[in-house]
Image (tube, rainbow, N blue to C red; front, top):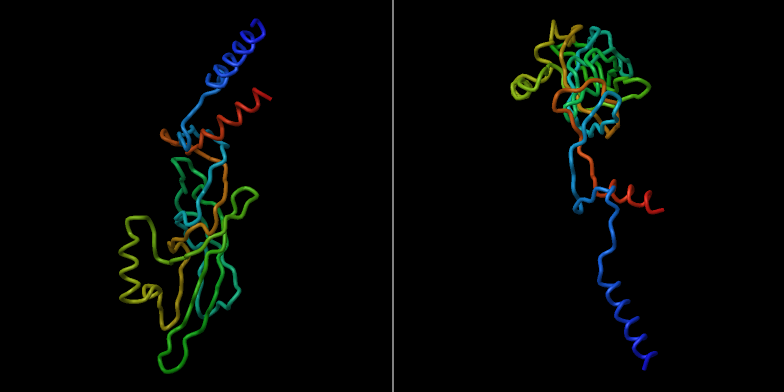
Length: 212
């Protein structure tokens, strides 16, 4: 009888242990699955700059259909700070490189010159930030629709045609976009600078460290 009573007591204790929730370390902050919270950004914090982030640039040297040939490079620079989540990741004045994709002089019979340009990259620290979607004559977000409308009516280089040649003057404004996702350090921050952080895996990692 004593052995049977002890066995029943042991089974009951085992069942209670199975039903009781496992203890959670009070030092680990738990969150619901998929919880995303903003984390404050400080200078030097790595910020993810998504592909297709708009950037505004200026051409730093004259480029002409008369003198340019495919493969020529030209200097450009960022004209406005690029911000992500309130943090400056590329400062105005950051230098970069553009390339002449196609160029042809004006010819007889009124044939106009031809010029196709591309923004290739800007250099931030030791990193090259690749660029794409170069559009000349666009400056600032408020002017995008106006520039696109003008391009459809008169062509994107209409304002730069001189005597049949296309001449992009030094200081001409343009827009581009980042070509790839890239992480850059925050160079400056605004009052609301914060980046989204997934706290679910962060909390799990901390819990594993404390229980290992």
